[in-house]
Length: 218
Image 1 (spheres, rainbow, N blue to C red):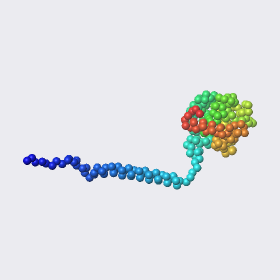
Image 2 (image 1 turned 60 degrees about the vertical axis):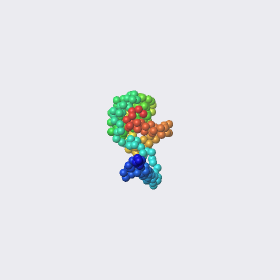
Image 3 (image 1 turned 90 degrees about the vertical axis):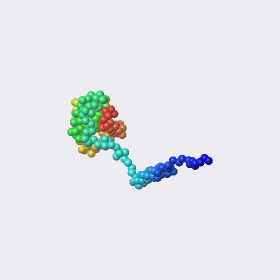
Image 4 (image 1 turned 30 degrees about the vertical axis):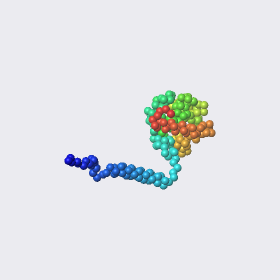
């Protein structure tokens, strides 16, 4: 009589130490831990922000160091750069950047401001009475100065450069205590003389900012 053997179905050996049901649980625990840490960091940041005192920020205080408009400062442009600007605007004073720079050193005024006045007043000597007077800043005529149509006239651009520096250093700064563009312009070019003080101030600051960033054209 034939003998029959019991045949049992094959079962693969289980993974040592871990059942299949335990594997997804590890990922779930890791995810919960990550979410808990993220939530804690977000809560900490929120609490830090909440308990900070209310502050009103002055836009000028947040400006970069290049945006200082006190004329009494070290040069922020050099003679070579000044010449590049004069050349760009096809100024009749082209090539005289060293002179404009040196007078700035002599009077303790950043030559970037002198150049900005020159640009605003006559597009660097290419427009208005400055084409005749050689004046950097179209200074009104006063007793003891040669004049042309009510403005001081000079025999050279160098003479005109120095007179502007001298005026700002000796009268505006030393005598009146005006050192920033916001203080100087309302006296130098007041609204009462049909000037736009705010526009003038913006123009000077814009030019100085451009040059301090290395950009020739304004």
